[in-house]
Amino acid sequence: MGMPITIEVIDASATTETFDVVFSYFEYVDDKFSTYKDHSEISAINRREILLEESSEDMWMVFALAEQTKQETNGYFDIARHGIYDPSGLVKGWAIYNAAQILRQKGFENFYVDAGGDVQAVGKNSRGQNWRVGIRNPFDLNEIVKTLSISDAGIATSGTYIRGQHIYNPKRNDQPITDIVSLTVIGPDIYEADRFATAAFAMGRAGIAFIESVGGLEGYMIDQDRRATFTTGFQRFVTDD
Image (cartoon, rainbow, N blue to C red; front, side, top):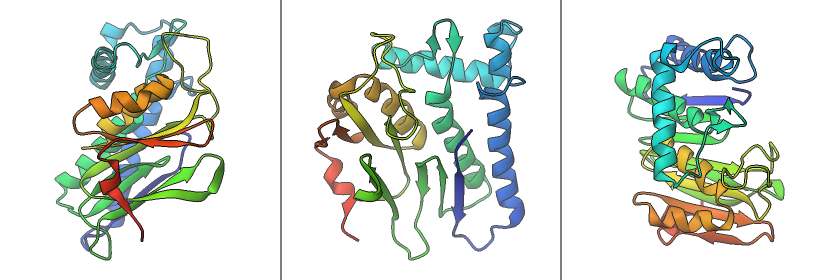
């Protein structure tokens, strides 16, 4: 996936095999959905070597979820650009969510899964408290501007401050997004947080109002002028420790 993946399981019954199973799942997702790998299924689809109707069940599911998200965001989430499909704006959150489900099914109740800064947090940390997740200052990556306390929730950040202009506005296909630099979303799980963070960032400054309008989501946006705007319920997640 081109990003670090971190897993912490507090429950004492976790073993090396536990982590191997989860990391193997991420490798499977990467091999199937990476647009940077020539042998991936999505690359074969983009080369028209495989028709979508001939693709795997997981590919079908991701395309269906992408279409659903497109409808729910008034077209601001679109995996097709210039005839090329790139579902990464949804796949990461979907994969983290599924990895967390693997751990749940094994009976674990206290853990987190972090892929590239997007986190699914379940239960409590080693101190018996909610998990702590920091929001970086996009203008100084060594600074944490907010520390959040979350449990049984997901948090995802979309932005251009690390990977550059990799998110696009489908309504203005070739116009870079410059009015905001970071948008963090807290959702009931990482799948919801990730897909809506991507779509909201594509909306620019209007994205935070969209997050406000969606039930179960809270958001924190930093614009190009270094000003922060956040939803009405966001502050309840902020902690000083």
